Image (cartoon, rainbow, N blue to C red; front, side):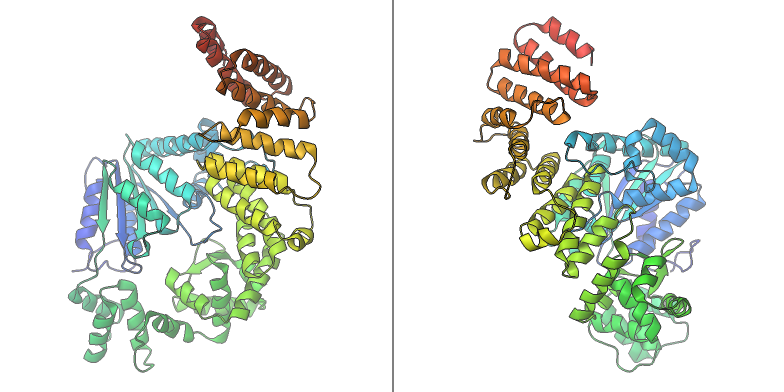
Length: 587
């Protein structure tokens, strides 16, 4: 029987799964529970519908519910996108509450749209947010919110999640919550092929104590028939009913599309999914089809403003096209001024139906529409559209900016992907010349190396810099070579390597101007570390002392702390434990 819930349609065939989720989270108990749940199932099987029912029950019971979605950005992922969404909505609803969280946990600003500090476009890794601090801030914020009222956090479609989001979820899963915080994460199980990045992560999550798994199986034939009668109260012919049950294979989304196709009276039902989805799209008028074509090229929910600019339709025609697409359940409003596809598979079908030249033209139109916008995430979108529009010069500029954005919010994996794309594009001299503003490939290499190091890919960081040193850009200056050598030594000191870090810092000191700059201070510190690595403690102490003095002169508090720690370790190693302790107490 359908479950009677405070939502628009009854939940059919999922009573057992609903009750299990309610039990795991403590929804039906007087004392809500801290819980973590992995919800999996094939595309269209009903994960979102089930989660909507669970959220509705939670809200009716007085819980606070935060929802974030992962989106398919391919290689242009935005770090922490679902957390930006859920904290952004919380900020819109309760700005005073979020401001109080910022005061307690400043790194949280990095993931809240409109609250982020200006993006740092410099190559200094010390200016980038520490991921550990950000993870702690998110965890502490959710813990605090759960202490005020039971909290349900839902993150949907994690098969599309960026690496930073997966890492943050791993942190939350392994640390757990003392307050009643329920974390529910959903993903498409049929998308997890052998090399899918979530496959290994999901296996690790499943082994974490306290994480429960709920897997949605196909609906039974009787439930499919009940769903058909709910969707189409006027009785279908038995032959059509049989066809729907047979072809849907228990998939709720397929049932909806098959019923819609059967009800349209358009003849025999298509046998493949693509044809089935195109039936719905073909029912739109020309204006709505144009809107849908544009939306499919957007790659995610798109704003009304950008949609209007790319579609090139007058206001009345655009509004009518949008209304038709929404009323026919192809698009849905996604916020106060944006639209998204009702189901991702509809968007995929619409995009696949575009002609090759049509795709290139639409992506080029998006490039023009996004080029003047500065909202967070725009650079990553712009880079993606530019590549698909065969505009490498714009893709190069946008990839650098997207990397800077990702690094500034603590997303080193995403930053590395963008920087590597920029390095690949910059290898073409024509692209480099057409990029407009000069692109400093040395600076770009240093940024990529820092991102790789922060992402735990130290050997990749070494390889990136080594390749640039072996194949320097034309006209490289001595200070630029010094920067590369410094970046190389920084990475080498973090792992086992045949590269001589001390030789690299020694040469770098000869190339970098002996001026009171941040770069010089950090190079002095790295040189001291390289000396200490060779057990040349006396020399290391001397250079570290110089680095500390310059760091204090320049107000580089983070560097001063690091160097003080290095000096304390040197004192400890020299047998002066008391002096070491005194030095550490001054930090």
